[in-house]
Image (cartoon, rainbow, N blue to C red; front, side):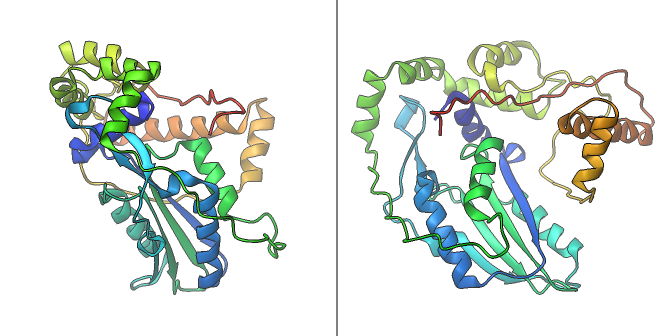
Length: 307
């Protein structure tokens, strides 16, 4: 694991900090279950990380490793359900909210996909849930590319690729790899005092204003690329809770692109403008005003050879 992914993995010692991604894909009709199952099976063969789980070494001698799950069971990760009453879009959002708050089985690959049918008015939803250490935004686009077609009636995909053989990482192999890998030596050094560091890090993330001091310095030095924001500049956004609230807002992409062209910006500019505008209204509703807020924006630094 990269240091930032390991941070996402370890920080879940505090349930309020679970790094869960939930994506709802709305469809105008339900796909055939056997076709969907075959497509997901193909996706796990093309993207082998979907068949891997996390293995930790005792005492954190090295960072967690991705290794193939010898007991991988596709049926465990796929679900087919009927949306509960009143069978509306709000009922689907509630399902997504519950999924976002539920923990993964850490002994298995960190993803699941649910086909939700029976929605009032027709249609269906694919709920894709995955752990942030498994994929970032760019990786998520790769997953959707493997899952979805660009045409409504796709062509023949050809023969099913073979299941990736993959090796199962044993504890001796993990330790030996750490001894010979320069990258893992660096991570091992950074995590040398993790037994005391991680709880302090989690406290500083969960209570960003009240726990600065030594924990802030520790975050900057050990997890610089994934450091939590310690000063939100907000008088109301100060603590994190375990409860999640989800809502939807539908805006045509063409409308956003036209707005971006009008001001000479990009689609990302419009998106961030909407977010900051919403935060302004949120503070006004709570009787608070702020001149500025902090935001963390991920930057894609992958190269063509990265996976």
